Image (cartoon, rainbow, N blue to C red):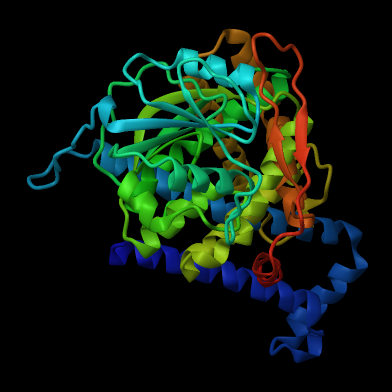
Length: 458
């Protein structure tokens, strides 16, 4: 990472730490311990005696907590645009090596969802001929070799999906240059090869509707936010990876292995690879389709597992990334309360005062800042809609419901912070021959002691 980006990370981290320190001091320390005893003491007494001021104080905290991750997203977005669209300078271009499909083995991961996997394999383009299905049960899939993970196979650390991938790596090796991992519901519309020579090549996702309209709208919103992925190759560590469409160089996989105790093996593998092996990471603008969660409940559980898994392994990250990651998680979680301060600010802006913001210092700044944050939220919805090019009623629905969609999208994050996931769950995917989607929950022993320690440290 360049010196400039190190300074950006350090500045954001320092502001975040200072913000927390001041808040804790205001809430914990008695007024007489402050040097500005008169000013701070008067403020503290007023805060305790005025419920309205307490509410505005809380709203300020929510706005500031949300401002930190939104500011960093804006930095990544602008940085990507600058790197991507700036005029080419001499020496900037690097030769991009495209690996043809015959250099790729596809591995489709499933438990036992034979019908969905069959549809996935059937939808693969003819260019992908080496297809392996890694399953937990003996299933039959035409057009692919099925590798069944025996119950007797154990790893030192890995469980569930990571254990299955590790079994395939050890007992079903390949001489292909890359292994392309797909989820059981991933559809690959076309595949001409890997347009990169990076060690890890991240394809992008395009969730399709399978159930309720609200989870689908939340996925469109999320994909708009996820444009930040395009800046990840310029960072020292990518913030996350999507295992439903990721190509990994076979030699790197053999050095790193999947033997890690985690429920987000894709992101953790990418972190270990770039930090321990100095692996290269690239995000390409090739989109694979996958299924949106079929219900709000499934979506909340999915987001909860995402946040729990990454937070439990955040100790792998450098300290500056760790600080940013935690504030990103907190900002995501407090988005649940976003509609409160957005509506309050909007009403105040037009002259309808629901909460007496005028008693707060710089109420104009608060209103302006909260509306700027709301503009970012709508920007993410617009980016998602521009990418999807959906029908007019979907546009109208998402734009009208964006604050509510953000609340639903963030509920799982708040749930994960307050109550980390203790179970590994797989959202059952919808087949053309199956009408309803259900959620299968696997029994999971408590996370390992080191993960429990990580959560306490968080």
